[in-house]
Length: 233
Image (tube, rainbow, N blue to C red; front, top):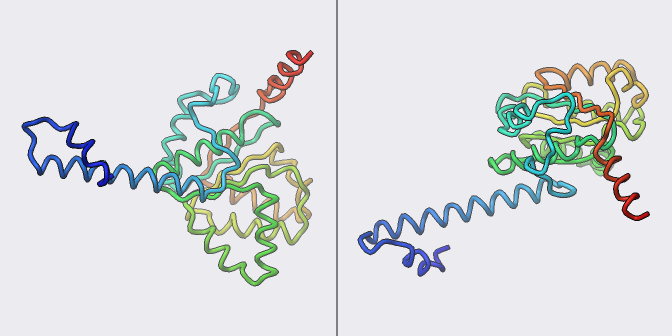
């Protein structure tokens, strides 16, 4: 921004001093650096694409009020070290809302990591095989918000269950987690071999948590696909 000082001069009033000029220039420099930091945090978070709260059609949520969505978007739940568990059938906006909340956290200068449950399990096992597990666990523990998407599409063996459980359990009361899933809690035994582990995982996730019912009889994605099909016909 210091290279663009002539633009700052043009915007200043003739009665303003060199001190005013310097302050204006430094404010622009600060804003530029903050914006650069935000972009880096969004990039390092690993979002598959960018989605925002403004793009959400909150009227489609059948079990949540728009005011509550904006309350979550303030990211106070992260400061309070609370978790969010999103439960709903496919195409109801779980991933969109997860990403949008993650973007909001990045905009506030927080560190975020986004991953699918399958990718996280594979990343942890690969790190363990390469003797890097402790280092990876420390990296994950440092992020302010861990987003685990799609905890329902695969069946996890005992090893995967244990390694995922440890990551979540280590964050309880320390840092926040967002988890999205298509399955009700009572159906989680279909994903994991160890039922005791399932119970412990649910207890860890729901402790100090917001559990969002995002089920819908008219999922947006299915409706959108139907519209596209009709247009193509």
